[in-house]
Image (cartoon, rainbow, N blue to C red):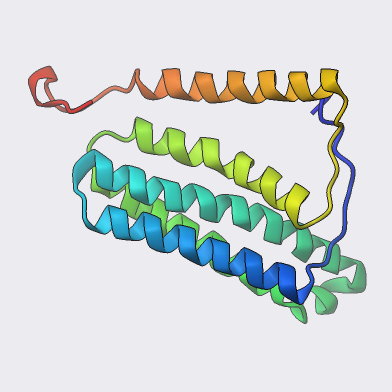
Length: 173
């Protein structure tokens, strides 16, 4: 955060931005869920985890819009679509995460995918559609890339260190 120095953007999406974002979300979810449906075990869990991580990231972006509507009070938030969309994507992501955890006895890789995608998708939504700004000086970009790479590397390392209830000869990596 100290490198990025995010600045608040706009709490509105145009109809065109909403159509593009919604279409992109639908396409990603269809691809992930189709791949998961055609797989089993860890591959299925990773497909479901990808869809879950995307939904969690989208929920973060929608929550920003919904919270922005609170300036007009609770009635203002309840009268706007973002509140309901955030609730729907949040609940969908939670339910999908439960299917993810049941898809395989190896949980760490799936959890790593969800944890990694959530902030990446949230940042993408903020910068692409909500006009949030991050610092773009060379040193700031380098710091952001190093910080994100470090976080993702840590997640990847931890995901390979999972405890498995299966004996070593039955584990699939």
